[in-house]
Image 1: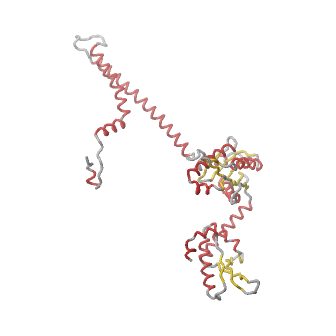
Image 2: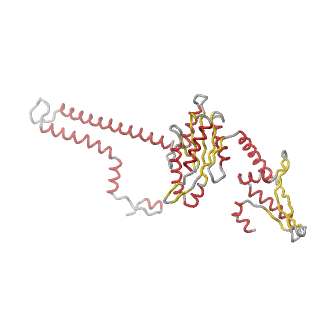
Image 3: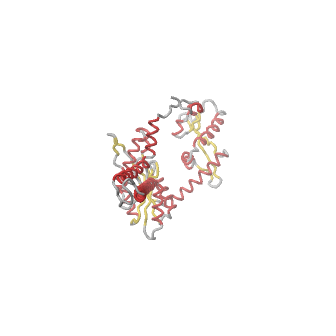
Length: 381
């Protein structure tokens, strides 16, 4: 049998059998049917009972079994049963709604994978702690896992998820009662430790986290080594709620980079370095757009003959206020902010155009970043 809708949509679709339609309606209206049965069966029983047995004193002859007062009593009883079932249904619905609201609120404040607090709950807790009376030190720990990306790339995301769940459980074990552990996303965690006895207490708490995380995580008969980079800022010493998060993140950046676990407290020099690096990034973008970075050629000399056999092209940037900047001051910035490709392309074009005027035996050397070895344009040459 074909659905008439197929003539409109141009697709073939089977119609729903009558039995399935009936079953669907029964499921949809099951509570209404149940209430009707609960009310109807006692009413019918009472009507039959009043038909066969006179429930009230006889006012007329025996043949008139059901009298108006009896009928009104039965109807009143039925209405009372109906009202009772409705009240119970509303109570059940209210309890279900309250339970659903509690569940939704819990899920809105919880990370679905690890069961830890999420960013929303962490921000709320930090806001609450920040409003507490002054004089108490509250630690904010930002934590990243070193080596986690390799686990995801080699073993897949399901194994990576198992590692994250285990790390979350270890962090819960490491912190004190009343501390809050949150997963902000990916392999980034945050810990809020209120009422700390200063920097030494924060360092001891971070050391417990490192000791537990440094133990390899076993999943499916495999051991996965991971390490933790932890940045710490203290409130109110390092600022208010917004500032302490930013500064803990800066300290985390300084702790990252190696394969071993590291813990760093925020220092004001870090903030100065971050601001200076950010300024260099914006000025570097402008310099690349204006094509202001020039190649500088360093000669290569054959020590046996003393002849020049080639030149190495090095980047030189004449900063308007800082003067000539060596490559080590801005090449790393270009790599971090995604400008290394544009910088390499500009310098290589200029260097090759200059090398065309050299003798044939003079070679050009050019440095590229390790990540650029995967660039197919270099292979095409």
